[in-house]
Length: 447
Ligand code: SF4
Image 1 (spheres, rainbow, N blue to C red):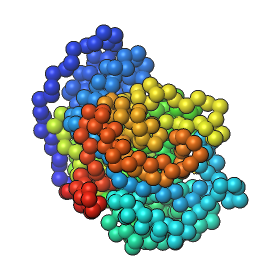
Image 2 (image 1 turned 180 degrees about the horizontal axis):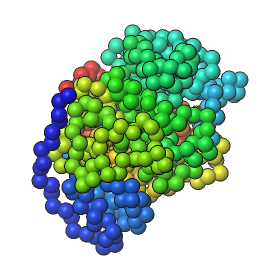
Image 3 (image 1 turned 120 degrees about the horizontal axis):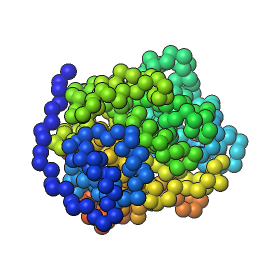
């Protein structure tokens, strides 16, 4: 195993405290300056402090340490192949039962057409998720990937949440094989064209929240197992946190802590050494904290946000989590419609805390579809470095009105990024810059 080292560099001097500065944040600022991991208690204080400006300034400092003034977008196309689902998660307004109004499933021909449209629009990525369809056979999914691969060989296919992967293990009669079953399903999908995993289905890693609003869905252990298996097979993946329904802030902080420990394991596997920490092993989880078993062999923290740390390269000898995507809950048309959606300030705070707590995630995404493009602009100044892409059709949540046509043009995305004070950089799914001929639309990845 190669060891990836870091080169300390001098940080810009700390800005003077502003009026309203919360002195309780001073030790956290010290830790961020030193590139040390924040504790659970630090995370809770960041949620409780009225001094949101210091929180956002700190998140911005870390974001600039990693990415300077670059902000990423991509040209992508989302495909929701079917909304038919065996489950009925309370927060979900997307799913339908087979004979219900609005239920659909795409044929292979429709999928091929989508792939052609993606190529015509210059997309570099197809992002595919759907419901847990009770009757589709496993070869529907491999045929879907092969069809896209054939129609659009250069398109990166990012597909299937961990929940769908576990469902596919059952559908293909490998559900009882545990971790090895998951791995063999993933390998079949990779052979058919899968390029990476999206981060959906994580929701909030807590049994109480799980049992209250998405009881039939996989628990955190299985979600983490799927991503671990994907990483071992060389795939990168993202991670989400769907918050603001019945979850408490403490449960969100626990979710972040579990994710960063899973990422420590992935980074350690690809050669990262344990990073600077005053107490690198001191806060290892124990059973009674309700942490999943799969992070028991935690090696200690790998802090990528410390000054001078190298971010992993997509060609590393194994996969890792690229991006954390905090997703605010949308109550409309769900079973939890009576609950208020999280406010803009809560969304901003949560995103900034994600940047600070998830110190080993290279990227933080303000997914404009769920945050609004206006809010995503603001979030670029408070921890986010990515706003996602052109999207086109997105059926999971609808920001405004009944239509699933939710598209931002490249000009919209670039203007939003520039207005926020950053330099727009088109990326591919693996965060490699894309060079594009604006006349012909031809593109290539700069490695
Ligand atoms: S969140 Fe996913 S698994 Fe749950 S009902 Fe909706 S589509 Fe089905």
